[in-house]
Amino acid sequence: MSSLPSSAGKRRLIVGISGASGVVYGVRLLGMLRECGIETHLVMSKAAELTLAYETDYKAADVKAMADHYHSIGNIGASISSGSFKTMGMVIAPCSVRTMSEIATGITSSLLSRAADVVLKERRRLVLMVRETPLHTGHLRTMLQLSEMGAILAPPVPAFYTRPTDLQQIVDHSVGRVLDLFDIDTDSVKRWSGERPDKSGGGNEAG
Image (cartoon, rainbow, N blue to C red; front, side, top):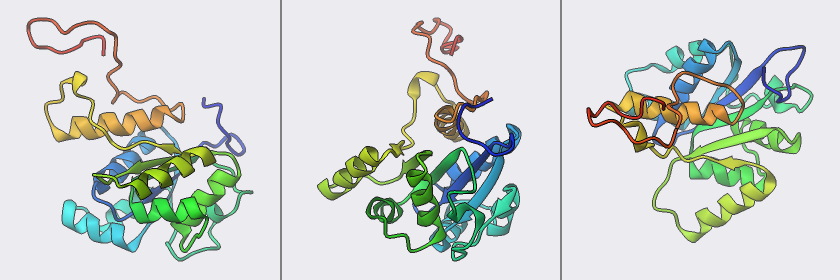
């Protein structure tokens, strides 16, 4: 069991999906959390629904159905907009620069940024899978500001020591490492052991 906050024994996590490229990270996150028995509260931006259509074969309704609870982006009165609604925290996967900037300034124009703001003010864990490169000085300053506020910046950087053979393995490992930040263990993460791979090319068996 996680030592992070929950309510009445329930482990809840808010999943935000913004319009940045990499919407598959949010989709896979919902799938993994369901497998782990974590209650999910999803909020998607309108731009995220557009990106979903460009990058995947999923319909917005399919992704919403993967969550235990879906909250409309404009529903400022949703449960996740209040600090009294206890959760383990929130992951925004992927997180656009616009969403990141809104959170950093406290100007919450939608439920997505409002829920993140609530997580920060309640001193819960906020993880942002920021998808942008290259980064200019303004982006970096915003990231520093968010880090000082308590957020965790976790860009989805591939781990090649795992010797991935397909895109799914890369996505799964990145999402699994984010869930590590909430003490949620999955089978998707190959743990580094420090041992060199054998000559057969089988990779680091100890993971």
